[in-house]
Structure formats: C-alpha cells, structure tokens
Amino acid sequence: MKPIVSIIMGSTSDLPVMEKACQFFEDMEIPFEVNALSAHRTPQEVSDFARNAEGRGIKVIIAGAGMAAALPGVIAAETALPVIGVPIKGSVLEGLDATFAIMQMPPGIPVATVAINGAQNAAILAMQMLALGDKALWQKLVEYKAGLKKKIVKANAELAQLQYKYKC
Picture 1 (cartoon, one colour):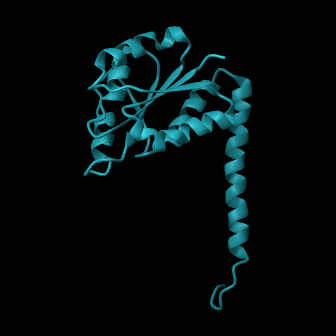
Picture 2 (cartoon, helix red, strand yellow):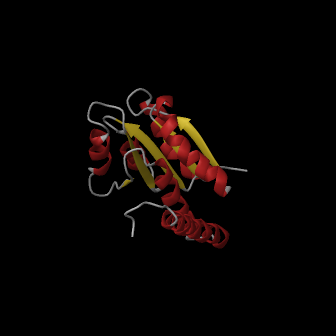
Picture 3 (cartoon, one colour):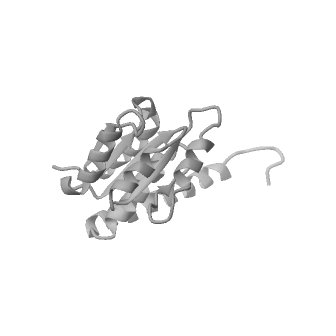
C-alpha cells in the first residue's frame, strides 16, 4: 500500500492538531503518510519532498504550520499537486499570523486554507478532491456526510427531551 495523501507539519509539536487528519484518513481507510519538515530549518528537504511527491503517488498534500507558516506555500511553489494549509495556533497572535501567511499566496501558487487548527476539515477537503475520480471513495464521503446529519438530528431530539420549568 502506498500513500496518496501526505500530511506534513513544521514540527512534531504540531502533531496534536494534525492527528485529527491522520485519524480521519485512518477511519476512511485512505493511505497516508505523515512527516515533519521545516521550510526554515530543512528547506532542501522540503524542496525535495515537494518535487518528488507526485512521482511517489501522492495526490494531495496537507501542510500544517504555525507562526510565519511558510511550509504550505513553499510546497505549493514546488509542485502542481493541490496543497491544503492548516494554520496552527501557537504564537502570541493565536494563529492569525499563520492564517494570513497561508492565505496570502501570490497568483499562480494557490494554497487552500482551512480554519486555525482545522486539520480534520483539511482531511475532509482532501477526501473530496480524491473522491472526484473514485466512486468508492465518493460513496464513503456521502455516507460520512449523512452521518453528520444524523448526529445533529439525534442531538436535537435529545434537546427536545430536556425538562425546564419555563421551557416551551
């Protein structure tokens, strides 16, 4: 089995956030890899990774980064594969610095950006991209989305059972 999604983070301190993407892919049975690479501390390794990802069978890259958050953009500059950036909260600016760094890419170098610490949504977005060409994956995605609806319907039914004196 070869990975089709690569999860990259600037440091292993980002793992608690990025684990949500790992768990989603595990649950959906989507082969993935996970690595720590730093745009500032290991720039050559980042470049080599990005240039070789497609040849290794990778179809989507999720890159989590905090503070200056250069990692997603550097990867996007070196590959034609879709890159999804996950801004990581971790600085005095509460992740806004990372969000703006990831969002403000120059024309021709897009990076999709999810919410601060939004690794699970990055994984779902990656699955949506992959599912466009894979009927079985599409069906899993449809079932996942239906499950989200069922959770809310169930939660609302439970709320209806709450008893308060002035609840109408």
